[in-house]
Length: 224
Image: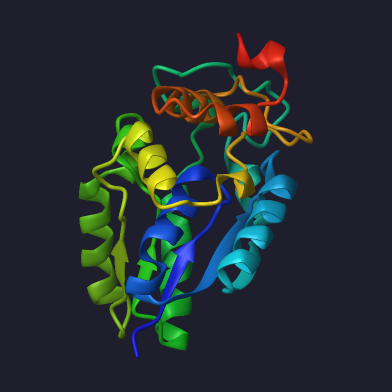
């Protein structure tokens, strides 16, 4: 029987990907990566809730060395930039998706998984090259040589922007209250970083005041 792994960060894209294709690909395992990111505690808590909700196994993989080879504001003492950035340099983690997918492929090859699901999407592909369809195609070609089982990477949101993703989530009753989409590690979403801004803009475009008020509870932040 087919079974699959999902890369789960606890954010909007991975949650909606899981909700949309869990049954189709029989997703039974979620991998969350701890590479010293500022949001890791909140990400892990969100992932644990999501995995309990969807009744799938959850593994956390620590990559302590990764934070030592990147200058990204996601892990170092630099402030996380606000708003939508014109380039990815400040929040770029070297080869992150390539690394995560290769680890997942090793696990898939060793334990008999057929697919690896990732939340790569059209909007983030504009600034992150490891979110593009070309990248997915190339890494699938790699796995034909680097694994015996040849697990296939699938990205159900590859042609979706954030507005589309939120629209799908609303239509499919995805529990967005479980999500953690902030680059920061405070007790609630900052509402100001790039990830929060994209998420909040998509909720606004879909006229979803319920989740705007639930997730971005600080009125000062909501109105900025």
